[in-house]
Image (tube, rainbow, N blue to C red; front, side, top):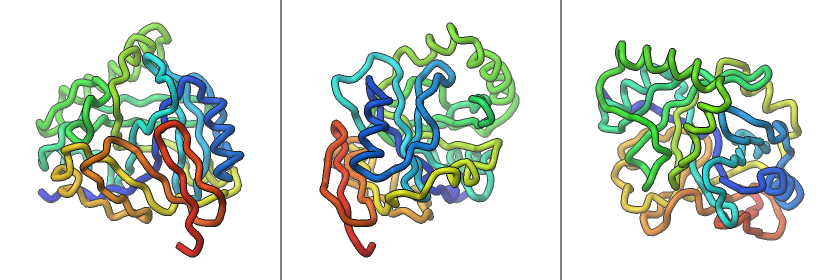
Length: 243
């Protein structure tokens, strides 16, 4: 089985002050906030719109001194369950994916290990999905709705997160509630020794990912348009007209 086609859906910045970070993305990057910061399954999360890509800012675990490029979220145009099966067959370990909900948004996300160092600690496997996954997802869906358990699950956040997400709502319609803002036109991924694993993926999305094995995590975002470059902690944002 060949690796599934994955499309970049969102990038993730981890911050001790997510409201402040979101405001800076909006003011300096021209990215409207379409989901304000709110508690979600044991963490705080808010989202800015960068055209077809969301920029999610999260607070979880021991807060970093300054914002860091934490990770990447993908969707699978050909189906979530088939994508999980294809990833595991290709040697990419993934976790069970319990459903979570915040207000009118419902989604599930499978953690993907082996792509970045020190990933979010979740039990993962390369076994073909089966009964154990279904039981874990069912139990997990109950547990993440219990605040104390959810907080415990996210207390140690690791240094990175790569997820495959399935939305149980019209994500494009929610995204369209905000103006498009500055379009995310390209993203640099610091693969940190995991270049071969990334190369094995079929990243057939609309936003090119530039792989850099000498760096770690989300390091650079290119925005379509004109403006002054700026940094959000460890992540550099550049404008480039006419992309």
